[in-house]
Length: 575
Ligand SMILES: [Mn+2]
Image (cartoon, rainbow, N blue to C red; front, side, top):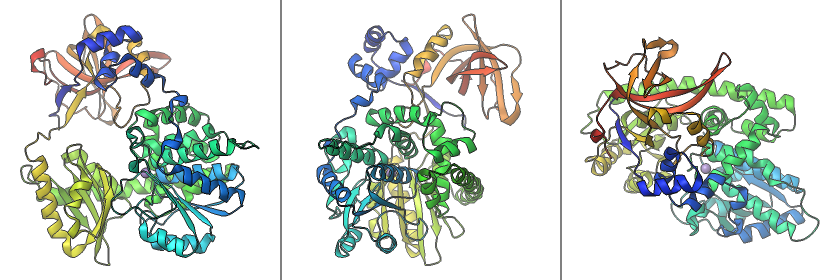
């Protein structure tokens, strides 16, 4: 597992120098920006500023005008509105956002979340029927789902219920005949296509407020106070943290630090989150807690948490979410062990490029996380299926950049009952009688696409640093690049020919501690999970992320090691 290919991100050296001068940036930061598509100083400055005023006009989303007009009419006529969401963190934050805003505008609004385990994802006919029976709405507004829910939308209309769809998923079929389908994937603005469901819901709210502001009295809503919800849904849905998503998340994180949402405040307390939550905390601390109850079939609790005005109730619910997350972890661990033992029984690296495993004892809400673990381990597209007693398999796929899921699943459409999603993550179901044929076909498709590629994990270096360049100025300059996440990862640096001073320290939890020296600079380094790794004699090249740690009142830089290797001459590096 130590066999990583180190690859320096490509960037034009002339651009780097010009950018560093123009924006007064340390060379490595200029290099990073140039390599990530911001070589032009104006573009880079815009990226670094990430101002809310740089968000585009929400009216540029397709069909948003008619959606806003209908919503405004529903508010004016005090019609009963239901926000129909989804059980993941994106769908739940989208729902809470729209409910908060419409209620603040005086709307008569209820929320509805489908049951993951019985009704499945999105606007299905059974979920719709339960929704109508429960709430008797005049108008349903979906968030994070519904683009192709043709049957359910017709069903609603024949029951006299109007439907507005807001969504961000790729259209995998006929577009639902709703009165408006607000989905950036149906438009031509490439910058908006990356929005999460909650980003689309935010745009809808923004457009609605703009509309209402045109005629007094002015609506008493400050949309900025809900940016914490937008940040959470956006990060948790793993959409790229560039463009408008970057702006929304950067400002949403500032809002989250001081959130007025009692549920989020309680959840942060229960999870032990400190002063300045960042995107990592959403992805690895808050996101899993918000998703866990939904996975286990009780997403309504998250919705209640995000909507409650009662601090005691908020605390209780936060505790329940925390407990559900622990339960999820236990189930996940067992499933990973079982999946690995199934795969190891047949796996040949030169034969198996698309992994499909199925088991009757697996939890259908947790298959996606297990698939993600398999991708991490094997670097191949992986599908994990829960076999149901009714003779069907339901599951999740996760993939690598080199293999687009939905287009490959389309080539198995005759074997599947349902599939959909994105290029790196998708869901599917099929009849168990087709399982063997599907396994073979999926592997064959993956072999055709991946068979000739080098699938060893790569470490994408942002720059080689001279040891003297590993300093506080660099660390400070990185603050402006935050938040880091999908498609804008935290920078990885490397340094050549570092010598180990003193003895390596093997510490608790498999942690390795080193003191490194180069060019007269001494640096502390730490490697999580590396305590057992063999340390080569002689100087090392190290790859790391830069941290500033305070310990016993002393603040110092620390290299968080991602890999090390015997020092190599420069010409060995893969470009
Ligand atoms: Mn989503």
